Image (cartoon, rainbow, N blue to C red; front, side, top):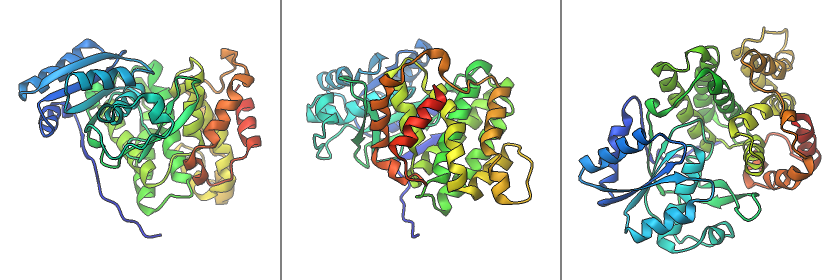
Length: 373
């Protein structure tokens, strides 16, 4: 298929890339809103504030971003007459800040945005500074968020030029051997789904094969999760996976992980990791060549045929998860399937799920839930 793309927004990757924040933000005005994850340490937020102030900017800080903080961020940015919004932190901070950047100049509520209010291309420039794993929707012209009214996920359209920049500074990614493995498997899952998508192309494949190689290297070295080199490599792999997911497409796993996380207290990386081998089993028949490649990269011995190598993929993933003590199911959480059935169906109805390499049915969704719970 023909491919046309423009690399936008600008992306800065590397140690101390955070220092570029002032230069980037100054292009948009003098008053900048910082929407910071409530779990982020104050030292990081203060460092960003100082970087902006050193560039002659006034920084207004909202440092308690929770899942439903978008309206508060939008109201504060309007009251302070902010010229741009910086989202720093994990996915909840990125989603809330992204919503607020759309909502603030339009003076609409989160409910109106989720119910399909047209944004008319009015928005505040958004600068994203992630501090955790791969997000499949960083570059897409849509993203998913949980509706506060019922905790069901919805797809929200996003202006194509909303992002001013993405800053990936490895020093902001904090890992320890306890959480690094789940974060790596979440990113592996994101990359594998995009790799097997019906929208995959030569460019996304090239990026994803590199991302998978880097992530598998990290998987084998989680004991070094506290080292700067680990975080720097993870930041690089996160960028490759996120951008390639835009060139290709996220899959049903990305939607299901978000749906489960929005309805339960289970952390998103664990949701994604648990789904990985279950959905990999379904990808084997749909994309045997690519699943054989993934199995080989993860250490499976090469079989006589591609199909036979592919069949080892799900078990290879499980063995690696067991070795790193990543949960293989969510049974210990005692979550009722009744609580998740409607949420999972909402995930199946996300438009991008149509790009899955097999037709995802209601029965598939229910069987996946039964396997992980």
